[in-house]
Length: 357
Image (tube, rainbow, N blue to C red; front, side, top):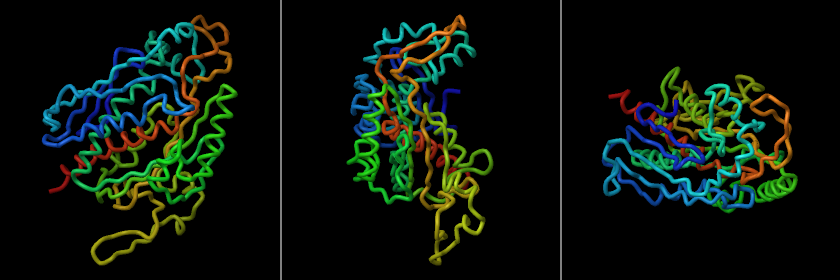
């Protein structure tokens, strides 16, 4: 269960402190001219060490495409993507080998497999998403070959500081914020909260909004291939993501049908709706309106405070994790959310092309 997608299929491999992380992309059509620089740029956005609140781990994250591409064009064969691990510092985890870190997957891995790589979380580390972001950028370039895809992805919450929505976000406002929040006052409050939390040796979670524009009508399959279900599957496969909602999400439960229903309108040629409570998806199929969803991310589990736990011998003990960890990983998760979105859309787009004459 290390692959995402069916026709556009990306299989992940590698561990946080292994020699490298990578993936194999199958199903990308031949002849797609890739902008290799944009692939590297996408991966660079999720790199550590770019802000005071991010992990100090310094990785160059140089993307190596080792198969499936010749002279920047896809060959239609499996595309191999490799990224070296250059700054792991595995010794930081030696004292954690025989204890279970609260909030981490250590105990679950031991109970399932009876053996685990204790260095940096192994497969459960966010590190394994780096090559997946590269594959996601290939998916984005594939989609843009067929339609003018646009995405606005931004932070709406860090800890108790929340952006009031709906908010008319712009790409420039998002890029100007150190936490990728489009509202200046909210962004500054988020940064202050992160700084205060770092002083306490603690961490913060939050939420990310993703708005996808210009997706054609018809993406998604009935029942078990629903667009929102595939997006949810991908988002909940991202480390730290704890919840997914689309459209009005949980707010829908407090609305009446008359308030929630989107009134259909037409210009005589196309169908549209006056509102977008459905989040651009009806019956699991894209409607042509903006696809809107939100994900919630938990606080990073590695905190500097002393915590009570147990060891492998099931004895009570305490730990202080130390090492290099994010105080808040929410802004750094944006390129991951976008990449996984593109891979889902590419997969369902290929399904759509095969489902109609």
